[in-house]
Amino acid sequence: MSERIVTYKNKIMGGYLLNREDALCLAEEPLDELETAANEIRKHFCGDIFDICTIINGKSGKCPENCKYCAQSVHHDTEVETYPLLPDEEIIREAARQSGRGVLRYSIVTSGRKLSDEEVDRLCGCAMKIRDSLPIRLCISGGLLSEKQFCRLREAGFSRAHNNMETSELFFPEICTTHTYGQKREAVRGARTAGLDVCSGGIIGLGETMADRIDMALEIRGQGVHSVPVNLLNPIPGTPLEHRERLSYDEFVRTVALFRFILPDSAIRLAGGRSLMPDQGRRCFLAGANAAISGDMLTTAGYTVETDLELIHSLGYKPGYLGD
Image (cartoon, rainbow, N blue to C red; front, top):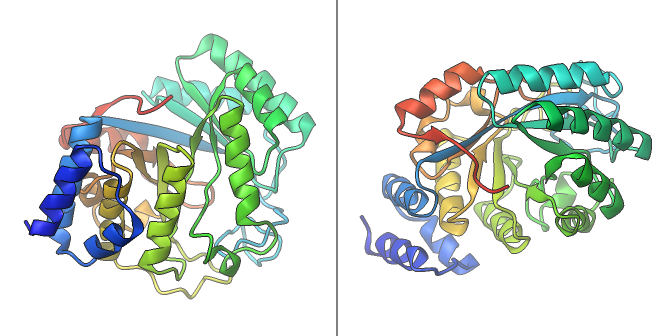
């Protein structure tokens, strides 16, 4: 293992936080050595706990935002299914099904800029019923909600809010122009002030540089976020990125390993795009990643919970909670 990797690994285990220049230097180091060191850092800070969650596409399509990667935007010509907020019974029934499969977290994800107060009220009612009957933790991905809305959701039983930064502040205007990076920051701040844990990450392969990825990881760390979804872009026909060349798996694994150096005690969560990986993400789970969204994604297929549980057990992990 290179002297630079060993030096930084030992410093991080001693409490040092990597800066931008450190991370850019590490990005040039041999990949196999980065993977090994990242896994050692993961074991040091997080042990063998693996945080697994599932999501339900609670409200689909007709989103007014123009994020270039998204199949649910009204600005793009895709074949995504559209529907309003699902009936309460369906949301509650799916929570029970996932809990029965051994899933520990369940996230309700909705399209659109933000949920209305009426929709928040409905989800609060669902949360109270789920909270009173099932041993599963609830997450909400409802867009650019206000602090007041986040407070209502926390009081009803949600423990975590999700809002991806997606990429670096510098590159973000190349991906979306209907809302700003600052508005995303404000939503994360509002969720944390309301007492919710926060899940925030991004998409790799949008056309950003490694420096952009590092800047995003540092931004997330600065926000006090410890659940970090890492998505591999799946170019969707009908979106502006449909012809984007797919990122190599080596490059994605390198990014995951660097994120572990930058975010040593976080749940680094493989999310969308895992079905594009040749090994179900196994290599990433040996290079710093220690969490996953299991089952189908919002508009694309994923791996079953049973298949994922089998994989993580084979790697020596134990399902559990990282963070709230």
